[in-house]
Amino acid sequence: MNYLKLVDTAKKDWESRPNLAEACERLINAVHGMAPNKFRHMTFSYIKNLSGVDLESTDVVLVTQYLCGDRIRLFDAGFEYITDTENFILDDDNSYFAMTENAIAHPISGDVIHDVKSDVYMFFTLAKNEPDNES
Image (cartoon, rainbow, N blue to C red):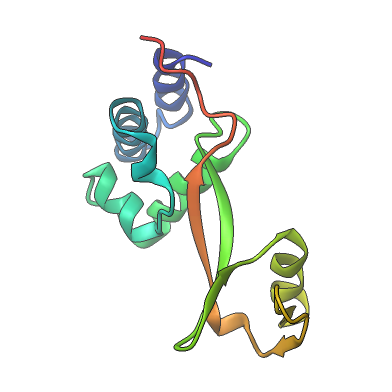
């Protein structure tokens, strides 16, 4: 899907919520106009600031979920384990077990780490099949 189609789709989908439509448009514009390395590891706060729209936290989540969805698929979601002593990106299996079992396997040692939910954070990257930059 090209750039203009992405913007048009977001505007139509969020017609009843103009502030969310504007946030989506601004985020699509940012991705269209900036170097991809600026989007390697985005947090909800980064996405909110990048949108330039005054959004409530729940609206930031809605916009981000939408931009990770099938209609637009601008972002991919990932999870990271972060403590005072180490951090690493979770693979799909560890992401699943962190949420369902509250435990993960250390990626190097294989040791099980328990009680991880409070140390697992969501982040976002550009989708691997990111939209082309046609105008």
